[in-house]
Length: 366
Image (cartoon, one colour):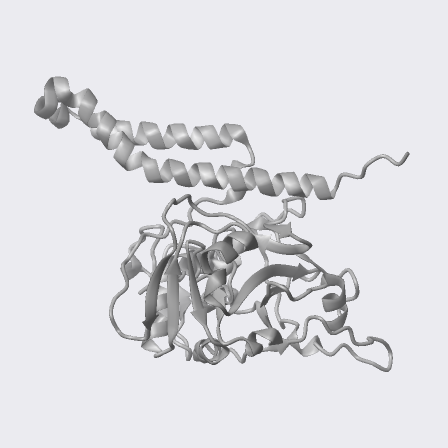
């Protein structure tokens, strides 16, 4: 049921399911560090889009799914699903100074003031900031642009606090990405609540536009939603750019692979039929492509690796003079998707870093 991006022999792992059905680590023979072992296994067991949709069907939760090109902004989301009615969502992945993480999901038009939210959580005005880019892959197990309430299904996100907009309850249905931003699904809050409860979470709905007084005689009203445990990140650096890019004053994460198809509507479903499977590749961190040299090295590595795999004694004898044409065709087939993905990651990384630099630039006063 789970993806295995590292192609590891799962028979060598020792693991068990917890009370909610999620897979948890027991031990990994040959790996001395339990923290490293846990991180590896959590990535191996990360849910994919297809697995999430299958889970919703198993729970008999009614939803509709809409395929579309990768969505990078709220406007693009409105273009493909805005005409269908219901509420579009935006998502923030935040952290506090004690390495505790928060996933905030709200309607597009809901104003989310991070300073006010920080105070209401009892963290002070400056207690919250955008989570670093590496946190998306390490904790939510999703690439940039795919932040969604459904990401808490992953074991690595167990300690992430999920805050949902109470405005969702006013909508007949709302749109979210199912761990991938080349599709949106519409689901009502009853269905979302049922899914969250199935993984052991009690849904928490918040009025994000409220600004209650916080002080000595008025304790923070959302203090109970602060996670009990911190989540350390490997090789953490506070200088890494934010993983999310603001849009119209609110933060929306961006990333994805390029497609040109128009939105494809799939009828509402809660059947047990299998969905069409697509491989999900989260192996590349966008942070790796902030450097042009690393980006080019990755392209050359993939190209040379594929060329060497094609040019062997057997293939030379088999194809003779036609070997060049055969290798060229196989390169195009084998690298087209990967190179499109790499180019999109590089583009989005450049966009993210450009915004990050702009927010720290102070124009000279006249």
